Image (cartoon, rainbow, N blue to C red):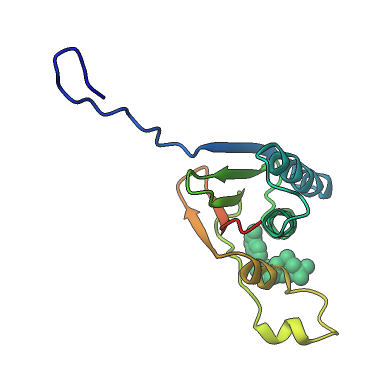
Length: 156
Ligand SMILES: Nc1ncnc2c1ncn2[C@@H]1O[C@H](COP(=O)(O)OP(=O)(O)OP(=O)(O)O)[C@@H](O)[C@H]1O
Ligand SMILES: [Mg+2]
């Protein structure tokens, strides 16, 4: 941009993602269900077709991560947080933050997904299969928490 003095000034770019949604939810089955429904609503608001692969995969990932936050990451009296962000490069980032920092997600071995008698251990394998990348960030400082995140690049 050209200023009055003839100097070239840069327009400051916001450091925040282009679109951000974040919500605290109760660590209950209802909270996990709300996470799914709010994700559908937010993705629709951002113009992502709900029948498209990106939205379908994002909702499945949120469902698994929210179920885990409620089942494995629950600390009585603490909520979990769902955060969705759509970056300027259209990368959709999902974050599910729970208060149980001392216990980490541990994906089962891939054989589990082929074992019809296995009753659990599929959630993170589904996340790993659907997301372009995923991981866990730990924050041990009080109030301690961890964030399980996944990123998707829209292909519609
Ligand atoms: N948010 C979390 N906090 C603490 N531990 C977790 C969390 N998410 C997952 N884990 C651990 O990782 C394991 C694997 O998680 P995963 O979602 O793959 O399977 P599951 O939840 O046991 O079963 P399923 O998702 O198939 O119902 C869990 O059994 C649990 O021990
Ligand atoms: Mg699970």
